[in-house]
Image 1 (cartoon, rainbow, N blue to C red):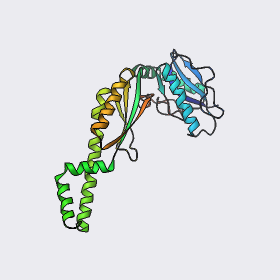
Image 2: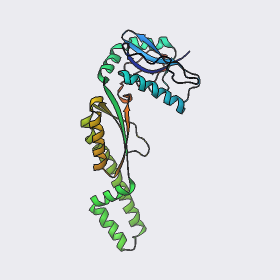
Image 3: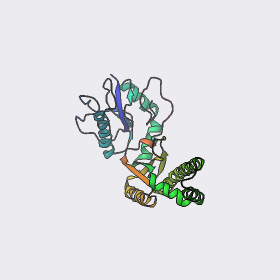
Image 4: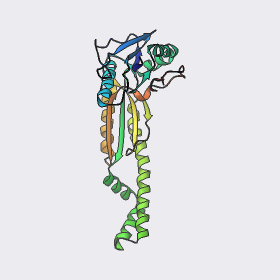
Length: 256
């Protein structure tokens, strides 16, 4: 039977509720695999597992329950190893790395921030900031709309200005929020978003970070800002050295 891995934690981590269910239908019982001073939170892996809403929520629920009781290194949904022995073997081989990450992430949570432009607002902004664009737009207006080439040129210049503004605003969001965090992880490009950044935040100063987000939202009113958190620190569980062949667990804690 394959083993589904939710998280890695210390063997001293408080116990989870008896009979807690995880992924699968019916839910597979969550259990703990201990190896030295480390432990893996696991269950049996159901066959044909797919990212259905019920199973995604079950995965998140296990992480939320475990994370509320102490520091965990969260695995992404779908992290599966061939068996229990493979999991404990990797824990033993990477004990130093995992203990270092647990210490570094203790008391920390992740906030993911995404942003996109409000189209009308950013167009007003780039026009206001560019005398060249305003002059060309006014010349087109006074000439009855301008020639086809004039319209194309204006459109290309506006598109380039908006593109430049995307890069400028992405950097500005990070500049305004980074001082309230311990680390920053830039996520992969996401369609429609000019910012996709995760911030590692101390639980004790999370309110300061949330307040900084609100200030950023007001100062950059031409952006739509979305915040998801607090989350387990998915983006800050750095992979360790290469694992033994045959392990097929997700990459968040270095198992893949």
